Image (cartoon, rainbow, N blue to C red; front, side, top):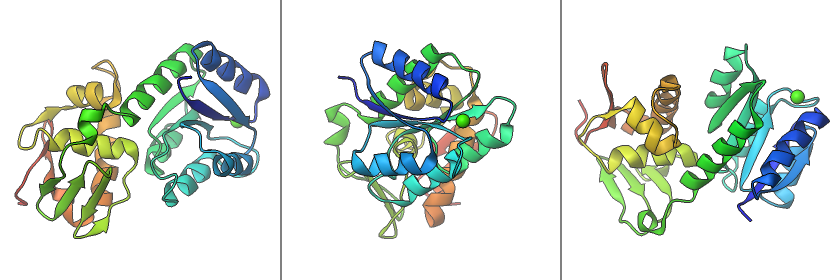
Length: 231
Ligand code: CA
């Protein structure tokens, strides 16, 4: 068993197609056909990852994602949003509410299965990462064993992906990391695609870090660097 996926989609044929492809690859699946049903099913039994359509008959997928992020038990639950390809707004909004990834419709079910695998691998990093000490950067503590970031003693409430991104920069503190390198290590993607994805997540990460936001430095034309000293 590779993990359980909750598929939230009101188009029954599409939900079944996605479920079929995931099961072929060894995942267990459950489906929900509305936003409220999705939230209820997550409460009943927490899945390992949620595939979440934006357009749902009751509350939107964006609202479902927002609600998951507001609760401590589900704030790190990985979410892939499904959006209409033409709707750039949905894509940006998806990241704003804390989605880990998105796929534009129509999408290849095979590609979705690969993305699910990539997200679950990074959500469950090898034990070596878990046992490392906390990393201190100014007034920010990246508490690796507890998978938690605190700024001036307050939890920053990062998603699993935001945590991975910050940790990736932190273990290479002071060294500039290109968007391609980050995409490859943090997202598990081939370089050269969707470098804007990195920018959108860094922006969101900075908002959550508040007073510590400026430790994440933009290096123009290259990428990002975590620095000890604030400017
Ligand atoms: Ca739909």
